Length: 167
Image 1 (cartoon, rainbow, N blue to C red):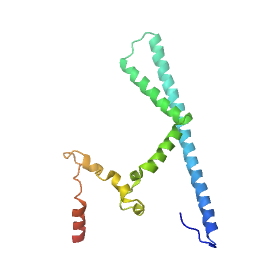
Image 2 (cartoon, helix red, strand yellow):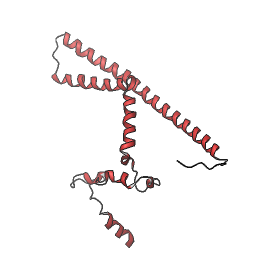
Image 3 (cartoon, one colour):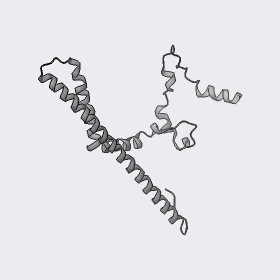
Image 4 (tube, helix red, strand yellow):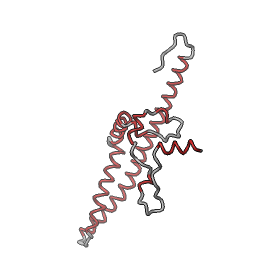
C-alpha cells in the first residue's frame, strides 16, 4: 500500500476515484455472472426439453416392445450428466465452487497468468511466477515432425541473445 502524505489534497479525490472504479468493476462482474447464470438456465430449458422428448421416445419404444440398440444407453447416461451440470450452474452451487477455485488459483498458481514477454505489463510478474511453466514448449513444438505444422523448439536463450547481438 502507498503511504498517505499528510495534507495531500488529492488523497480524498484518489479514494473517491478508487471507490467509483471498485463499484463499476463489481457491477460489471455481477452483470457478467448473472448473464452466465441466465445462459445456463436457458440451455437447461432447451436441452432439458430435448432430453425429455428423447427419453419419452425411448420409453414409448420400450413399452411397445420395440427393439432398441444397446448404444441408446450412451446418450441417456451422457445426457443425464450434461443436464446435471447445467442444473448445477443454473440453480446450484457450481458458480460458488468455481469462484473458490479461482481464488485458489489466483493465490497459489499465479504463474499461470504470466503473459508473453512482449506484453507491457509482463514486468509485474516475478521470476518465481515465470518459473512455473519454464520447461513447457510452444504448441507447435509438440506436433509430430512429419506433420507440416510442426516446428523445432527455438534455440536456447543464450544462443538467441548471441544472434540478436550480431544483427
